[in-house]
Image 1 (cartoon, rainbow, N blue to C red):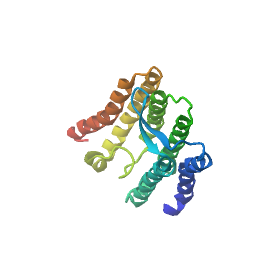
Image 2 (image 1 turned 45 degrees about the vertical axis):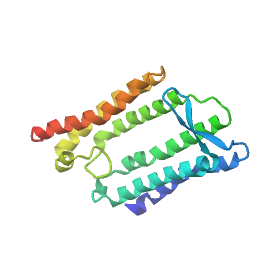
Image 3 (image 1 turned 180 degrees about the horizontal axis):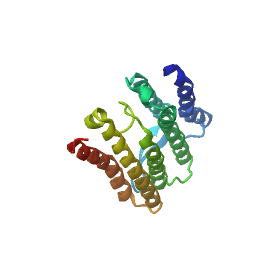
Length: 210
């Protein structure tokens, strides 16, 4: 599986590091202190030095990407992971890297950035996309809702992921729509519910002997 997906890993890694190249091109135009964090009101509340913003930030993203890839390759059930599912997961960090790079550099150069709308919307839409794929996930140790009872029961796994898929699509759409009007509490509550409710549903199935 490693050889089959090496090309995909290389391509996604290059995309993750594209903002580093952009940072080098813009180096002389970038200020010494660059915005690196926004609060829920969309206000900048933290800055990083230029070197960290250009190299460190995206280096961390690449490291997370590498760990995710290696963990998937080492999964004893990686044969259950389809190429489409793996591609979907491996493109999450590259998309976030390009988005973060674009917004951080834009803010550093004085372009207004509506971060309280952008990030919740993108994350919400990712839930929608992942929700569409969730029912297709087969049992494995790196992707999906990995609980003792889902890993021990194929039926529990399948029913949990079908339920979670529908919930994530509906919840993601609601979160995306409300993010346009700045309802941050809906986004936060949605994130919590989308994580907890499927686990609760899976546990109920387990209690029923499924």
